[in-house]
Figure 1 (cartoon, helix red, strand yellow):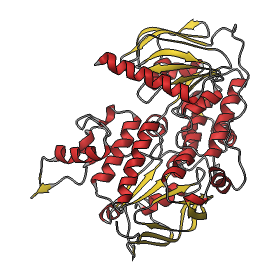
Figure 2 (tube, helix red, strand yellow; figure 1 turned 90 degrees about the vertical axis):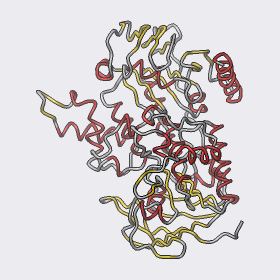
Figure 3 (cartoon, helix red, strand yellow; figure 1 turned 120 degrees about the vertical axis):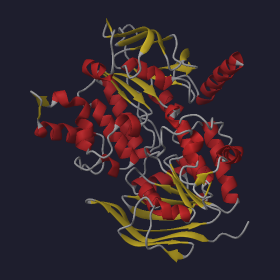
Figure 4 (tube, helix red, strand yellow; figure 1 turned 180 degrees about the vertical axis):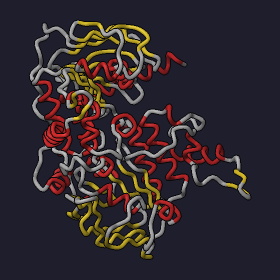
Length: 507
């Protein structure tokens, strides 16, 4: 491999969104053959910095150099031509197209305008490198979010990029898939490519990166060799103070004799859910533990009525729910915070105020007329309690960081004080400080008597926060564990054992 050389140089770059300064005179260098991590709290500017390098944003001031040449005009197409590809946290695939069509969209080979039919061959070459196991002919709209992220990574490789920007690349991947991705990253850097790794997962950053740039409030704190950093040193620099990497004290468990607030029996649905039975008491945090594709989100969607059940019963506050959908569930006090905030949760071009109040307009309207004063007061109170920054509720949601978008999504569904909340991946793409805020919120809701069903691919969250947890595999409940006495190692062993047994039974 050639000796490293400077591929991208950012010099005193600043960027504003309205009155918010996202970047403040930031300078950073990216060398060939290195994994360079960007870390910081939500809103620190790390994703904005990555998007400027990737051509998504144009800096207000400062200079960008690529291969030693100053860039005067810059956008995603010019970045792609310069060998820079970005896999953004906000996935940008075309749902109606297949996996392979999305992978090669815009770079299809043609002769005199006639498309060459060699996508399958090119797709196999990329699959040989990544081994993701995706069906090239599958429609993207039918894929779970973890597979969508894989398609985005394949798109970057298909463009033969010399610099690949990965924004939260592991947020939807299992531990095994993350390990495979890291192997691929090391293979790419071994070929002299540069990988910019934007992540909240500090363990992954310490494992995979060569250098790390730490940001806070739009400013560069430092760039240093990763070998000189620890998890605590990163957190201290990110927050400006020391922060214990721990979970809050588990909320008090409700009396086991207490009647369930929600009781599900033999629930079935067309998305592979069958014979699911579970109970949640008032003030109880109950987890759904499973591997990606186990059916946890599908169970949650049936409970809230986002998908139609084909069998079984759902009893809420001692009344069986015969006809349900998200609207009627919300009126009863049952809500779900979905895992995909872009596709299922937010209208990104609309303001924070409009998004947060969207599901609760009946509470702030009279005779069809919206009370703007009540709307502003309730939204401001919610986003302030969730420590959303900045508290600019009239700004479009798309201008906020992913973590702050997640806080707005939580505020939307907590508006109106529901009595039963389903949280599907509530801390995905969220930094350590924001995670602590969300953890404390979950415990506070339970202390107020709210029943909570928690789904998280970070199994430590479920084990640390929940009073009980059901094991899910193959679209059904396969067991129950006591999080206070279950280790992460034993949990993973059981989950993979269930998966292996089901694969053998199906073969």
